[in-house]
Image (cartoon, rainbow, N blue to C red; front, side, top):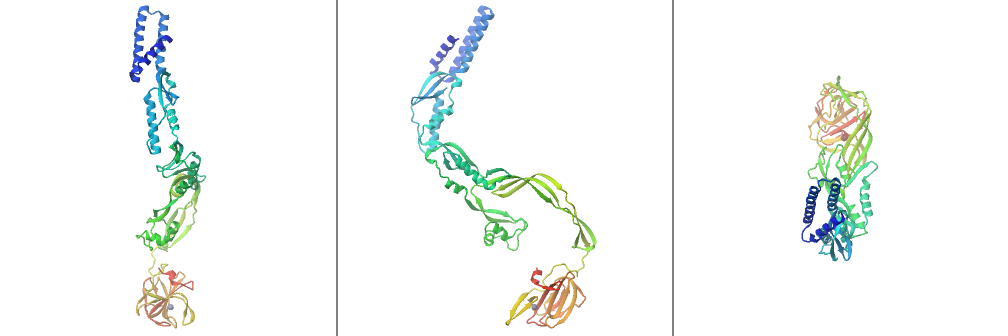
Length: 487
Ligand SMILES: [Zn+2]
């Protein structure tokens, strides 16, 4: 066996330098073909004597196996040190070029490896061919200006390089920590953040994390769209975003102070972290199930009136949810499971269907007359003496129509030394209204009046200076500030 194997291989060796790898393989195959032809001739000559046949078959198998297991290769020797064996010189040269190219990128200048390389031809078992990445590592290690380092990158931009990953990993954990709790199942940055081990320029290494930490924990103020929800006010929204109402209105010229509607979009100036953190919490909590309300018509009650017949009761349920936050602000709540604990009990409410008489109080007031307020409700000093003003004085031209602030029954229509010609309407809901100093009264005691009905003409009778309407509101007999009851 030995005899046959080695001469053959040496033959291949001797001619290998003339051609590429492929031709060597072809030569092997040709060699095996030759052997097969010789074997055929052998079988023909000896007419299948079993013992000899078996020996020949074993011989053939061995040659085939040898070709599969062994190959010609080159030992790579750099500066006198053998690095390993490659099948082809070009493989080693390609690695050299790759390392040089990479070093040039890292250092930002031309670079050539300066080791002396030689190759020694030798036979090698295929499994003993060197792992090419080992050459790469060796060559990188020869470059003093380059070393392995941990690179922290944000959005593709390298921010910091350290020899060890511990501090950088701890910094990334610190940035996420404020948004995490025992229910957090996901915590990730909103932009790509990388911590990779790679070859870097040695002079890039730093121990100082302060600068990068300051950058990563910094906030910028950015314009963010806020959508108005129920219960929002301008001052509430402004204070939530550390703004004044004036600042909020200044960047929302379309907004009107008098009108803020659910669903309106306002631009707010929000503090946005340099590095956003998205977290998902898996939470479980109990919440109320609002009692459903069933309305039943009642023709004994007036339209707009209602009465609770059965109080009902809220139920309760256990909810499992995944809640997504961006920098701690809830973005989305996905309910994953709901388990009812107690069922809600329906609330039953009777609602009136009977037509409401026009003269019946609506429960709110309109202005009896529009004009300049010349005296407000409350204490005042007049010519050095203090007195209390129990109503609202509204100056209007003589003869202006005075209207009932709400529907009701006229209980006074007459003269009073102070009030002059005045009217009192009882609204039959605990409230009464007074209209004083009139020039003329248009209704009488016992009349029923509707809201907005003209009941008198303005004047300046009684204790009065100038034509005006003195308007009073009394609730359960007590004077109230009319301003609190007017739109
Ligand atoms: Zn008055």
